Structure formats: structure tokens, C-alpha cells
Length: 439
Image 1: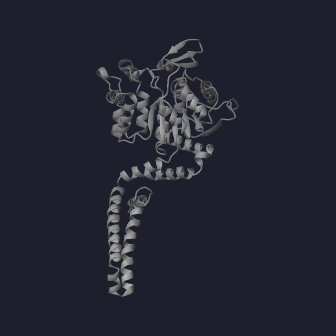
Image 2: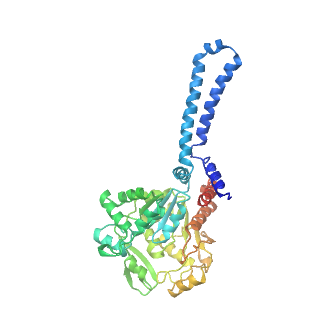
Image 3: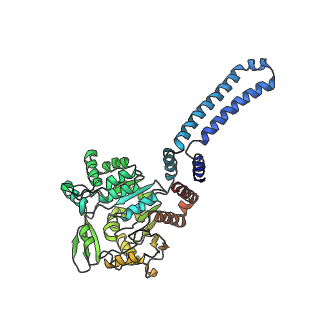
């Protein structure tokens, strides 16, 4: 007979002893009740005098009544906790929410498909996540809704909300569902939902909060700005390209980018999140159309300069034809430093696992290549390079959310002593709990 069911039962019983499940405290209440009852009976038996008991009847009655009340109350609450515990996800959510609330305060900036990878991994380790998402997209469904309704482009925001969501798979598939025919062809349900929520709630931020509640989002998703912004770029051949999607499709190398209006204002919540952050993550994602647009909001840059948080740039796995053709890790950091005005990047996180030849060959045909370190000396001495296996075993070359999250946490523990003290054990402990949960 397999021992697997027995192991699962043992695991369930062990989980009942986790902090926050409220089993141990009610066991203690029951034990205290029995102790009081035993104490009263013991004293009465030891005296052998009914007269003594009668004389102190009020005290004995109170002790007995309190003992019975504690036993009944503790047993009832213990039954409820056990009933909710074994085989139920409710206590698990309660347990993890308590510990995730103690996690590091992380601000992750970007867009596209890169930022969701960071969020999807980190949400298992901390509930203090703030995603700051670029809103310069002018293509696809987002561009059409932006032009027709005058709303902020919802596409990247939708992807980040889904990445942070704690929902059933059906809800995730629903938000990512894209219509294929009729007037709605090309639109995703999630984009239309966010547009409808803005109309119903009265403004974009209120609509985001309501949508986050529907998806049970762990953390917050905020637009980089509420202003309608437009991204422009000057290419190496002198041509000026306007619009994020047009910049991404350009074949020439990008010389510089800027945003109109130049004085776009961030949300107060974004500034507060940066002020209190332990970790600020830039990337991964398209350098000029996902990462840098967030850094074109001047107040955000100023707050990053003042922040005491650890700033980590997650380098892309592959270059992007045109936008970052033949870019090394150093080229990416240099481009970010030009925008920030000075180098505030404390750590560059780089994938050091080789991309499988068959995948690398396919990317090569499209003009992309692995992002590697060519000349570490070009990076400021302040910036440290951490190279680890961050690659997802998949048909495309991209970051593994779980590997990336663990690497970011280890980096935070290593280079940010203010956070590491008293929290490093918690991170490792929670990691073991997550492994147990997945098994």
C-alpha cells in the first residue's frame, strides 16, 4: 500500500500548527478550562470537608463555571478551525496572507510581457507589491480603446493584474480572452472590462481598485501617469518615430526617446510606494518602450534618486531587433543611466544559462541574440552584477517567474542589510512552505 495518503494526512495535521491558523490558541483555552475544573475538584477532594466547600461556594462555583465556559468555547472554536483547516484553502489563504504581509515592499516598473513575470513570481513571497505600468501603448486593442474612449491603454495593466491575481484559472482565461470576429475582433475581454469599470467607477484609478477586488489581486497595479502621453524616438538615421508601437517596429537603432507632455505627473500612491520601498525592480521588458517610459516621468526619477531602496535592473534574456540590436548588458544599463541622469542601479541581474540551440537559432533568424556581458568595466563600480540561471524551460527564451523571484529575494537579503536583518529566515522558511504546498 502506498504511503502517500498517510504522508498527506501528516502534512495536513502539521499545517494545523502553523501560526495564524488559530488551532494552538484554542487548544490552550481548552487545556486551561480543564485545568480550572481539575483544580476545583482537587482542592475539594484534598480538604475532605464539605463545610469548606460550602463556605467558599461562590469561589468554587465561579472557578467551575469559568472552567466549563473555557472548555466549551475552546472546543467550539477548535472545531471550527479544524473544520476550515484540513482540506480547505481558506485557512491556507489566511496563513499565507499573514506572512505575505511581512514580506519586503517592492516596486516593480515596466510593461509588456516582462513585468508580469516579476509579479507572478514575487506574489508568492510578499503581499507588498506595487506594479508601476507604462501607459504609452498606442497599438492593438489598447490603442483602439484609447482612441475611441479617450481612456488610458489598458493592455499592460490588464496583464499585470492577471499576473497578481489569486483567482480560478477560468477567470484568468476570461480576462485574457480575445475576440476573433465582428466589431470586437482583436479586443480582449479584460481590456473591455477595465474600460467598463472606469465608466462605472467614475475614474480610471477607482476602476482599477474595483477590478483588483474582483480578481483578488495581491498588491497594487498603478499606471505610471494618468496623463495621456505619447512616446517619441529619434533613430540613428535621424528619423523621428512617434508612438510606442511604431518605435517597437522600427528597424534602425534608437538614439534617444522622450515623452509628450514632458511634465506628466505620477500618482501620489506611486511616489509613496517608492518612498517606502525596500526593493525597486526595473525590467525585464522592452528597454525603450516598456522600462524607460516609466522613467520619463520626472517626479518618479527624482524619488528614485532619493530612495534608500535597493535598485535592481533585470536584464532581458534576448535582444530585440531594431530596438536593442546587438545590445550587451552594459548597453542596457548605460541607456537607463542616461535617462536617470546618474547611475542609481545597485544590482544588475543577468541570466547565465545558455539558451537551447534550437531556440537560439530561431531567434537569430529574426535578428535577436542573447543579452550577455561583454565589458563589465563599462558598468559603474557601484553597480554589482549577479549572474544566475533565470531561464524558463519553454519554447521561447524568457524569464522563469519562480527563479526570478527567488533571485531577487536573495539579492535583497545580500545587498540590503536593513531588510535582511530579521527577515532572511522568514524568506527561506516561506520558501519551504511553498515547496510543500506545490508537492
